[in-house]
Length: 221
Image 1: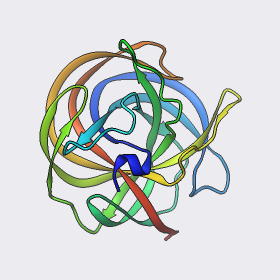
Image 2 (image 1 turned 90 degrees about the vertical axis):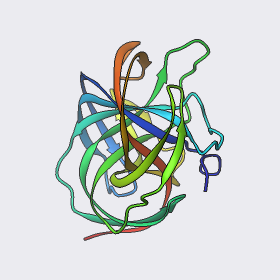
Image 3 (image 1 turned 45 degrees about the vertical axis):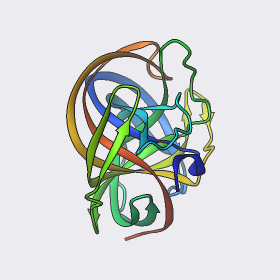
């Protein structure tokens, strides 16, 4: 179950110097009976596609900007799934925000048109932690990190913003987001997406690894 088979990369997320954002969107994923509004409020993190242990990338142009978002409270859900670290059994609660397809503006880059939006749910309970090390190489750095506890589960969602909709393109692939060994890393980049037009962003440290994952089943608790 690698990135190519799921048509979704691993992503290494970096903390950034927060930037204000303001937008109203409507999201609907596989947990929702209807579209749910979200107020997008802050750019928190930036995700690079990353090669794990030398595996090929699916799309080197695919990046994700993680925006903090405010939504109504949601019930706790149990989700069971699997990825390259094994099977997982987690409980998720309220939203942590929205992952937005983003272009990192450099020579030769293009916008990742086939990348979905993802709503991130907070992981509040989990059965086990991988506790393994992996070599990660992205467009910034190559390093070996220890994989820690899962903190978020990202579900593909359709999005409506300013009367323009974006449907789900890859409904099978999800992202389970793990803590990793943090590392300070300062770099200024330029990004482009629907909320940021050629914005200058300062990356300050690596924090998380998002692993492409299959959702096997789920239920409301």
